[in-house]
Amino acid sequence: MLNKILLSTIFGLSIIPANAQWNGPKKKPTETKEIKYGSITPKHRTDASMEAFRNYGLGQFIHWGVYAIPGNEWNGVSAKGGAAASEWIRSWSGKTAPKDWTKIYDNLYKQFDPKSFNANAWAKQAKDMGAKYMIFTTKHHDGFALWPTKYSDYNITKTPYKKDIVKEVVDAYTEAGIDVYLYFSVLEWNNPDYMYKAPQTEEEKKKYNRFLQYTRNQLLELLDNYPQIKGLWFDGTWDQAWIQSYDFTYNLEKELRDKHPGLIIGSRFRNDEFGSRHFDSNGDLLGDYEQGWERKLPAKYEWLDGNDWDAVMTIPPNGWGYMKDWSGIYTKTSDDLIELLMKSVSMNGNFVLNFGPDGLGKMHSGEDKIAKEIGEWMKINSEAVYGVRHANLDESKYGYFTQKEDNLYLTVFNRPVNNIIRIAIDKKTTEIPVSASIIGHQKVLEVKHSDIGFDLDKNTYYDILLPKDYNSNKAFVIKMKMGKSVDKTEKLMDAKM
Ligand code: JFZ
Image (tube, rainbow, N blue to C red; front, side):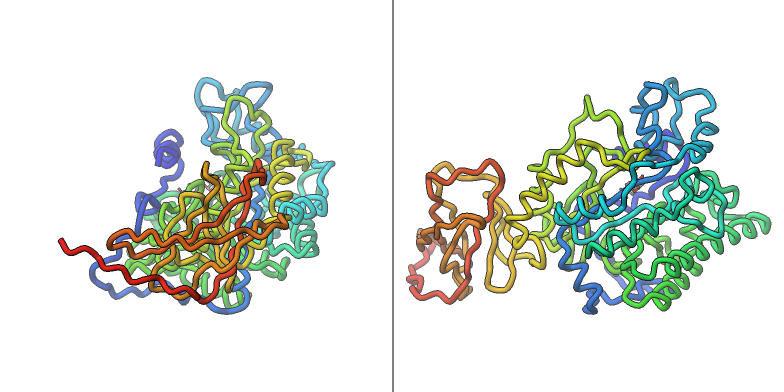
C-alpha cells in the first residue's frame, strides 16, 4: 500500500490503481455483467504445463539489467529514499540524486560488460537451491532489452558484452531441468511512443498504436527466439493507455496462446473493457494464475478461492535489482524464507525468491549464502514442497501442513516445550495419522490417539511424541502416513444447554 502511494505520488510516473490491492478476500460482484473482453482461460487448466506449474513449489526470480551497475548507489551516495527500489534507480530524484542522473543512467549500457557472468553457474546454484522454475527479466521499465531485439536499439548488442543474455539464461536453465518464464515490462520510461494516459488526439493514437505494435513484435520475437520457455510474467501494465487498449490486449493474449500452446500467463497482463485488472468484472481470473502476491502472502487459504498463484519475494525489504549495500536494512534469513515457502505451498502457491546479480554477473554474497542454506534444507525436506497440495486440516500453530497422496507433512517452526505435537483431525474423516517420522531422522515417532472429549468439538486429536534428544536449529518436517482409523472414537454425549 505504502509502496503504491510512493510510486504514484513521488514519481508521478505511473499509478498502480486501487483495484490491484491484495489485502483480503476478493469481493465477488453481486450481479453478472455482459463482458466482451473478460477471461478467456478456464479457472483451472488441467494440461501438463499447468500441472507442472502447480508442482514447482519453489522458484527463482532474477532481476538483471543496467541498474545492476550502480547497485542502488552512485559515487558512494546511496539512492535509498531517493528511488523507489534499486531497479527503479533511473527515477532517482531529490537532494541526493546526482546531477544529470537520467542521462548518466541512459548511457550506462555502454559499460555493461558482465565479465563474471556464467549462466550455467546461475542455473547450478538455482538447482542446488531446489528451484524448479525461474523468471528472468528480459526488459524492465527502463526499456533495456537483454536480448538482441530487432525492434529497439536499446539492447544488449549495443553493449561491450554484445551476446544474447536471454538465450544464455534460457539454455542454461532448460539444460539444468529448470523451467523458464520471461519477465516483460510493458511500461517503458524512455520510449517516446510510450504513454501513461490514454491517447486522445489522432496523433497520440497513432503514436500509441506504434507502441502497441512494438510490444506485440517483441513478444512474438521472444516466443520465436526462445521456444523452450513455459510462460510470460508481465509487469508495468497499470497505466491508463494500456488499460484502455483492452481490445488489443485481448487479441494479443489469444495470439500468444495460439502461437505457443501450453503458455502460462499470469493475471497481470490485461484487463476487461471496464478497466478491471487481474480479475474481470465478473470476478473471473484473467490469465492462468493470480499474480498479485508480491512481497506479501495471503493470510487465509480461502482468500484464494481455488485459484493458482505464486508469491514473488525479495530478500531485502524491497529492491529487486542488485543492491550493493545490505547494511542498515533487514534482510530475510533462510529461516524467514523457508517459512514463507512452506506457508505458500501449504496454500497451493509457488514461492519465488528474487536474486539481483551485480554488474559483473555475480550474485550478492548474501544471496549466495541464502541459496546455500535453502538448498541444504531442501535436500532433506523437499518432498514436503514438490507436488504437494493444501491439506484439508485446521491450521496448526506449530507450522504448515502439506499433503501428497497418503503422506501428510507438517513442517514445524514452533516446537512445543512438552515435545508433543497435537494434530487435530475432524471426527468425521476416516483418514488419521497411523505412523510418523521426522524426515532425515531414522527414528519412528510414537503416535497416540488423545481423544480429549471437549464438548461439541468437531475434532479429535493425535499426539506425535518428539524424541527429547532430537535437536534441530532449523524447521523440520514430520511425515505422517494417513490411513484408516482402527480404534473408533467413542461417541460422547454433547451437553445440552
Ligand atoms: C513491479 C516493478 O515495478 C518492480 O520493479 C519489480 O520488477 C516487481 C517484481 O514488479 O513492482 C510492483 C508491481 C506491482 C505491485 C507492487 C510492485 N503491486 O501490485 O502491489
